[in-house]
Structure formats: C-alpha cells, structure tokens
Length: 179
Image (cartoon, rainbow, N blue to C red; front, side):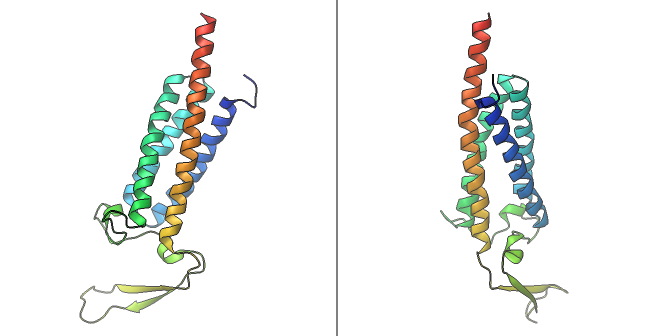
C-alpha cells in the first residue's frame, strides 16, 4: 500500500482522535467528571489498539476499534442529550460524577469570557465553609462547549468507522489474494 491510502488516513484519524480524547480527558479531570474520565480512558485504549492494528495489519484489532466506535458514538450522543437536557435528563444532576461529589463541568466556571466570583452561602444553608460561585459574561455557555466536544468526537468516530471498514476489506482482500 502507498502512503496516501485508507490505511494512512486511518492512522491520521486515530492519531487525531487520540489528541482530541486526551484534551477532553484533561478537562474532565479538572472538573472531576468521573463517568467521562472512564469513557475517555477506554476510548484512548481502543484507539491505541486500532492504531496498532492498522500499522501491523491486524484486522481483528481494527474490527475491535470499529465496534468500539459505535459505542463511542452512542456515548457522545448521550452526553449531548445530557447537556441539552433532552428526554428528562438534567445537567444539574451528579450523574457524571457517579453521585460522588457536586462537581460539574470545568467549563462551567472557566469557559471563554467567563467572569466568576465567590458568593458567601446564605445563612439558611449549612455548607460549612463552602461558597457559591457566580459566573457571568460567558461568550458561550458551558453546556454548548461540552456538546461541541461530543460532536467533534462523533464526527471523528464516524470517519474512523468508514476508513476502518475500508482498511479491513483491503487487508482481508490482500490476505485472500496471497493464498
């Protein structure tokens, strides 16, 4: 195979997926979003598997990557629905942190243009020394940033799925013709 083939394109797409997933992983760690952290970790492992399978001509690994992309698209559709509050989901629940903490998306307080200030808790609430954070002036709301992240993941996964199917067919055709 030459350099500008589906195989090289799949390597490029997997590398791009890896970079985007690592970026997302960092911001999910900053926001203590444990469910997305776990999903991103699994995604990174499977993308590495897909890269290895593509480079080493291992169609079974590429098939595993292809199957995972379907799950990854479904997960990202769920995240889009979660942040857009579709179907009874609420972005204000602790679902993404497995109900362990009250943390939210890092982008909620640190989005582009956001100005935040600490507001003391009302005396009626017994929160110890915790304060509320007031966020104003955001150029784009945090839920839309999360939706954009998920949409990019979906786009890369769909392109990766198509190229992975093509590379699998090319590799299996080469194996069949060499016997």
